[in-house]
Length: 184
Image 1 (cartoon, rainbow, N blue to C red):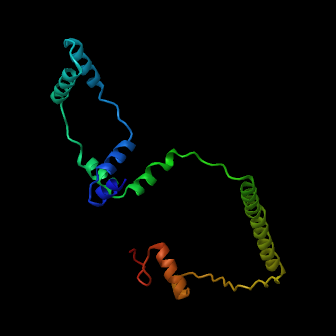
Image 2: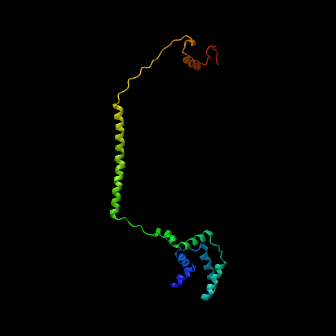
């Protein structure tokens, strides 16, 4: 144990790397890989374990090896720097949800019922009362007496006999000029 602590303090991240890599989800091999490896070994003569291991290594070296994308390297480095944070981010989704205690659920339901009661009954009642108050106040006020409008009827035989404002309106509607009588 002391040796592991000393290695960790010296900057040896191999133990952490093994833990992180061990916690990652295993990915399946590409679809053609298993078939190619099985085909290669079915044709090869039976040999010992050491020879078989060497042949497997040759087959795997012959495959198209593509480097990991840079983002994978960056994510791995981030996870190695802050392993507790990444563990906390990764695993809570797999935890089972706990049911609320019955007392808490009853209190929440009572609170929700009170809010709904206020929203569904109290708010419309207050709105109706306010509208009734406005109607009552308007109905209580005495109606103002109608003002008498003075209308004067003038019968004129020419435009000159009209008031200047009425003359301008009549000229504008008829399209004639005032004193000359010519069309515009």
